[in-house]
Length: 380
Image 1: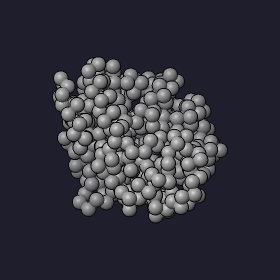
Image 2: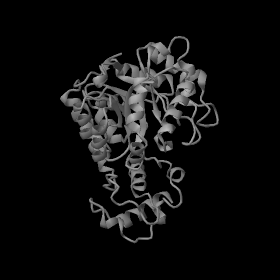
Image 3: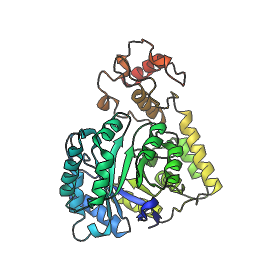
Image 4: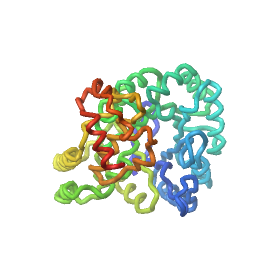
């Protein structure tokens, strides 16, 4: 296992972290029913092989966002028998449930109890965006984090980010954070915080945790044939997952990559990659191969939407960026992306009444009304 410095914390973390959001499930598919026997085996094997960063969150493996899921209690079980002392726990304050300063203390107390620990090593304010951030500031998030560090309930404070780059820089500058967590992979260089945010946070001394390095598993398999051919023609032989992970690890600003592993094959493959992937280690030929694969994916993008959000809110409630993201993913990966599961009837493309207001604000000049018709034709 290779280790990297975690920003200004002076902690050293394994380059691979175990994400406990997609643990193996018991038959039936209920997300709250973790196959604990198998999951504990996977987590402990990874720890025995050097992984020292275990990531969870309040709602993971639950049936809704308004109450605690089963991931945190599972982590407590997995880290018994001396494993707690071998790792750093990262978990997250459920920011969407916070209305007052007292709420913050209450949820942290509950999480410490659920994790059966007296402190959390890396505590994140979860899923910060432009809607939640003003409420958190008004409720006293800075004072809460300062006090929790002072009294030892948490060691280091960070945040996970889900919004546009401009807000990312503002949040980085708003508090003396120790680390942050962003989405980053070879298809998302300009998504949310992106490369610019990665570099800005690193300049400020923050440790950087990467989520979705495989874009929810899409970069781990079922690549377009042309993309697979590019990788196969290189001098080195790697799986698609190995290529994607190594691209992220090649960035020296990255501290740890989270992988939501749910089979032993995934664990062993990712451990092998993590034992070899130094920063700045990809050759010119390897970087060229990945750039060719990126170009192949981008040729399949149907709508040049950057998810900037200027088209929102739609008067009818259509989730325009969400519709376009699923439409593009369908053409890039051949997957329907659970369009009918994640979007309400009001949010779907077919709810568009063609008022055209969105098109007056779109900086990309997208013919949104026509494109929404195409989305409807594919999914509805």
